[in-house]
Structures are given as C-alpha cells and as structure tokens.
Image (cartoon, rainbow, N blue to C red):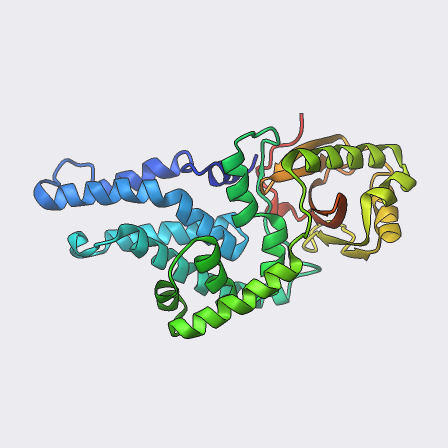
Length: 328
C-alpha cells in the first residue's frame, strides 16, 4: 500500500505526520498557558480530527496524494499564523476553505504541466486492502475518490471541478463554494450544474456491487493468465476504452478502443507471466496490481457497467506508484 493511501482511504491521519503537525502546533515547550494555550491545543485537536476530510477534498481536486498532502500541510501552517485563534468561529469551514483554495490554485498550475505530459494523464491510484468489508467506507470511497469519477473530473475546468466537488460531494453550501472559487453563488451553482451533467453522462447506469466487481476482476485475471481471448472479449464492453499512463518513463500502450483491440492488448501485455499478480482495492474498488516480467509495477482500475468492463485505467508511471504494496 502506498504510504499515503491507507490513511487517506480509511479516514485516518498519516502515521508520523500527525505527530509532527501536532508538535508544531502546540509549541510543546510548556510555555503556552492560559486562554491562548488552550485555544492552540483545541485548534490542534480540531485540525487532526478534520485532517482525513481535508485530504480527501484535496486529493479529489488534484488526483495526487503528494500534492494533497502539501495543500493540507500549508493550510496547517496558515492556521498557526492566525493572530487570534479565537476569531475562528467555524474551524471546519475555515480549513476546508483554505485547503480548497490551495488545491484550486495547485490544479490551475498542474493543468499546464499536464498539457505537456507524455500520453494520457491518470490520477495517482490509491491502493489498499481488497478485503475491506465496511459498507459505509466503500460508499464513501466510491463517491469521493473512485478512479472513474476522477477521470471524468479531468475533463472539467478547475472552477467546475471545484464547484462540483465542494457542493455535490463534500456538502458545502454554494455561498461557501463561491468564496473558494471567487465567483458569485449563482455562478458557482451554474458551474456545479455543468459539471454534474458531465459526471452523470460518464457514470455507469448499472454499477456492480463490491462482490460482483471482485468476481469479475478475478475472472478477468484468469482469462489474462490463460490467454483466453474469447473470455476476455466476453468480459469487455464492445465500447471499452484502455487508457495507459506510463508518463514517458516506461513503455505503455496509451489508448485502445473496442473489445477486440483491448483484448489483444491484454493478451500481448500478459504474454510473459508477471512476477506477481493479485487483486487489490484501487480507489476503493477491486482492481489489479502486478509486477511484470520486466520488473515494472502496474496498477489497473476497472470501470464496470452492466456486468462488463467499460474502461481500464492502467497506471505504470513509477512516479505515481512509489510505495504501492505488491501482491503477495
């Protein structure tokens, strides 16, 4: 599991980061006292409690764990520079606004870099335990950080993406979203509506349950290992799309469309048995993690609709996979 993935998926603070942030905030030399000291301690506790939500907001906006961490850390530093913490009446609103503004600025800068990116740019996958059985957790993951949603969000402008995420996914009122985006409430309402239509157009009509997708991924893995072209074609939607992200760092098939073309790509990809291959939770849904015969790590996420695979997002860029735990 990536060092950043588990705590983000499970809604817990990252080990180590929590302790460092808390130490900086509290000024642990014992000199803080009275009302100011109590206020600082309360802000520290409040920040730690809100950190998982803040990370999800930033990650959903940016599609990058590292950049999400940077935004949350910068928001923490800004919180510590507030002259009178007692003036912060609603800490959650203050921090969400700060992180969202930072993430929006970072996304605007990132779009320039992504225009020069070699091949398709895919979000950094979050790889976790495929056996997680908490239904509430899976619903949260499916709605806020699923790979299918993040890929659709890449087609939106930064303002549309932020407006939709903050209002529709994270529940902020339009007045607060307007403060983040720098538009009127009426304008962000329109931005969110346009984004919502894009998301609805790209959302599976008949999504699988967690168990159904795991069963399909297992059948898919067996068909790949056996080179069973007919079985692969049967598992793939006729309009299936393969998107491959090697970032120019490793060889990767970039785009393939249609069940026959994608099945051929898969058979060629699996021609030499991988060193390791297994099912893992990729952004909360069953996917595959493998180390191929050339030693390259690959994470595959699946979009499934009506019992067939409609999209395969294949991340091979090593910069996006550092720390991913390989299948045993």
